[in-house]
Amino acid sequence: MRYAIHYTPSPNDPMTFAAASWLGRDVYSGHSIEPPPQTGLGMQELSYFTALPRRYGFHGAIKAPFYLAEGMTEAGLLRDLMRFAGAHQPFTLPPLEIAKLGNSYGLVPSWPSETLNFLAASVVQDFDRYRAPLSDADIDRADPHRLSATQLTNLHRWGHPYVMDEFRFQMTLTGAIVPADCARLERALRSVFAALLERPLEFANLALFVEEEPGAPFRVHSLHPMGRVSARKIA
Image 1 (cartoon, rainbow, N blue to C red):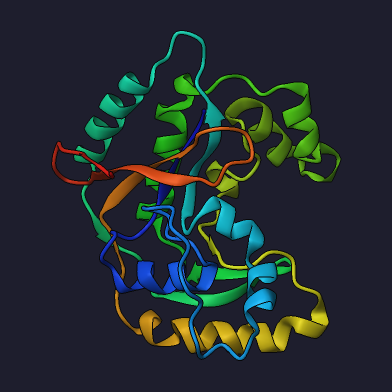
Image 2 (cartoon, rainbow, N blue to C red):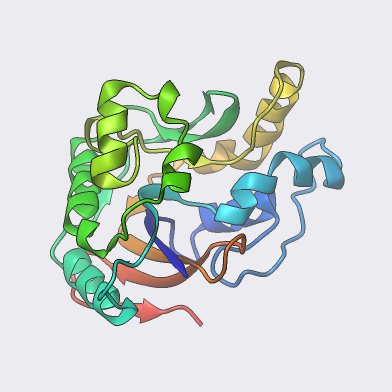
């Protein structure tokens, strides 16, 4: 079992419905979802372009997937995540926009948020004790030879290269896209998400994601509302 701590909108948020339709899977229920009709892409084509983010579910990564360290338990992780979330106030994200992320597409804030960056760094630091050390294979998969000195330090210290000062919030919506497909993918994304990007999105929960066995799709295990000490299990 692997765990991750992420942001994802609440189950009833319109952004959650749109993302579930785009990716073909609801990150809460795990159920397959019919694709949106207006993309101009065929069903198989859309499925191909979204295969990787579909497995990980719609989210903005805060603490990357990890195995529990020796002596740590899921119950302890849930208890501490509930307390952590309750001690931090909800806030409004900067407006999200569709952006090219290397060779993929996703949603990113229109400008940096110090509140978001501070929260992400706090999660990485406070929950590092729950993370089992990376194996040599884990480090190799991170392609350490392509990392900067700071990113390599982060990988060994925190288990992921893109944390602390290297953190950039993003909600990935496609896998790798070749240049010839970029224009129509961007048009398709705008047809699904453009109207939703005009409304503010609240960062009001931290979500515990789980991967029940290697290669299985990640799903939301529980939502932990910020600003009050409570958590509710997602059935």
